[in-house]
Image 1 (spheres, one colour):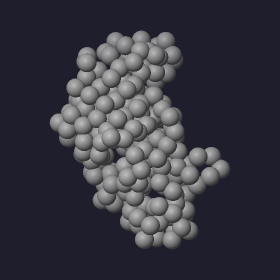
Image 2: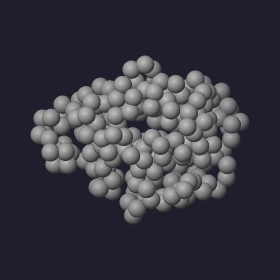
Image 3: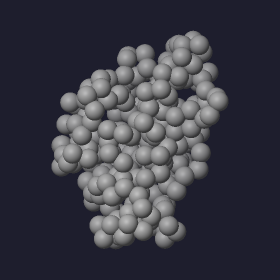
Image 4: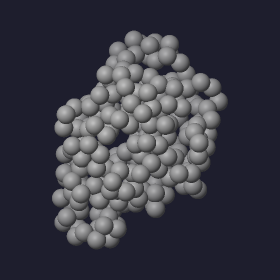
Length: 230
């Protein structure tokens, strides 16, 4: 099930606002101006988007915390792109920022969140990692919208599948699925590339699952629930 047209318009304006402000979250007034909606309409839409798991609002406020691929607060994923510095909400979202901006970028991250730094150059045709890298999706796609911050915190870069296995066992965290960074980037382009348009947030379940399948990510881990919303 896709977002309703008004909510999809607001969601697209949020992404466009992050890009326009160089990483700062757009305010309700800025979203209202961009969408020609009233502030109350924007506030109502933000509440719905938060309830649906499309964005996360800061506790007890109507201010944005995360709006994939962006985070309004610091994360492990710093993305330099188009002359601006962004915080990616997770490893995959960091790739998604470059895809959405349609510009080369540079990602600074921590492998497995455990301190070893890595820098990934992202060209317009894909990432240029200094070593083989994987993006680990610990949480099943069907559960991402249940808690975006949790799902994001568990989507990390790793050097190898063995490293993922060791991390999962050592930390007692879900094993999930890991895919090569090049494959994750192709999904980021398909998923986030049109994220500044309303159409990019109005895909139905079958269309979203086709995005996964189109890049070879058709494992059960990436299957969605019948009424999945984005």
